[in-house]
Amino acid sequence: MKRSIASFLALVGALAWVSGASAFSGGIATTSFPVPALGCNFCHGGGSAPAATLACLDCAGGLPIVEPLSTHAFKLTVFEVGLQDTAGLNASSELGTLAIGGAFAAGTTTIPGTGGRLEITHTSPKPAAGGLTEFSFLWTAPAADTIATLVAWGNAVNGTGSTAGDAATRATLDVTVGVNV
Image (cartoon, rainbow, N blue to C red; front, side):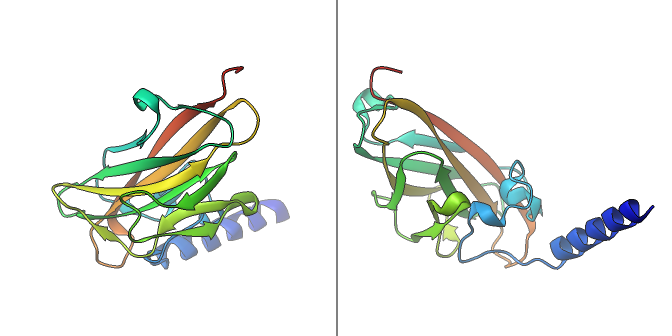
């Protein structure tokens, strides 16, 4: 009985936190995702989920195959959804090192995330141009041959400053590091 009461109180507290939450207009780390699988959608909702793509900008032939310790530019594209005409992002990876950079890096910064690793996020919601919002960042591959997964959340928002009327999509990209994988 005590356990069920404690569980109930925890649920009520979580719901109160969500209902009173405001948007992270200055960026967010994965450490702020109470349910990692939901990412931004744990707090943001009521909008339409955008299409989002994650691609390597300077990988040979566009294929995500890189040399150990090499640095490459990646781009997250979030496609505008009606009134959700601005966007935010969070990009993370358990392997390698993320940094600010690339042609679409304006309005991005690094932030400590899960495990103390640097992640990429927005400094403020970025307006769409031509129906899409583009963010870029740099990623340096680890020293050992492996497959690393880059994870990026693209959150299409309506710019009201609240979490209502927004929705996010998770994009992933597996990057092959080296040839002995």
